[in-house]
Amino acid sequence: MMKARRTVLWGAAAVAAVATATAVPAPAMAGEARPAVSHTTALEKCQGVTVDRTAPVIARASVLIKASVHEIWDLHTDIDAWDTWIPEITPAKKKTPGPLRPGSVFDWSPQGMQVTSTVTTIRRNRCTAWAAPVNGIDGVHLFTFKKVRGGVLATTEESWAGAPVEADVPGNQAALETGLVDWVNRLKTTAEADSDCAGHKGRYR
Image (cartoon, rainbow, N blue to C red; front, side, top):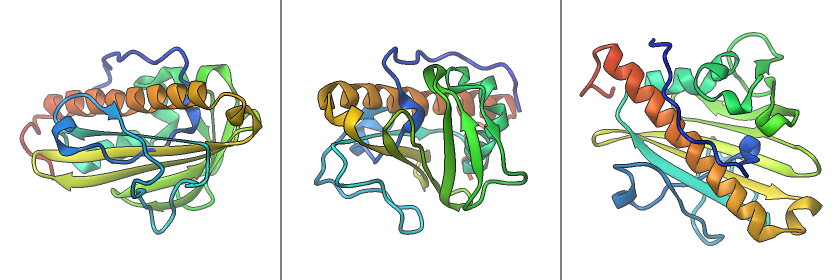
């Protein structure tokens, strides 16, 4: 895997430590991710787990990645290596040895905050969901990966609830959307660069 990582801007307001998302319409998939949100939209699921539909803030972002689902999955779940491609949320380190699994605990540090997340559920190469409580915010963060024509549709969806969120719903909505869009765009940029370096261009198995 190529170690050189291209940089994608991380939103200044991105408290995106606690992110979750859903798919955007198909026309938006070819380029960079864009936010899409509606409390009436069908939520993404990971083994039946969804974000909190009743939360005042729900954000989602989705992007088409032209790389194999295995490469994308490895980047996403290798938490100890997040600093090589998304340093804004590090230091990040697993506290539970072994591969990610339900009950796995990891620490990470978005925008200098200390967050301890616990994996709720996981399905290899398909999805992850974890809790992300921080500073009075109850966050639920979900990622899904679906093979589609031309690559893999990566979607992230997150809900925020709690008094700090209710104090400024528009501001928190904007912050979360910015963070989620930047996160999946960074994943896309890194995975596609690694795929090209490995000579896998055009093969998205």
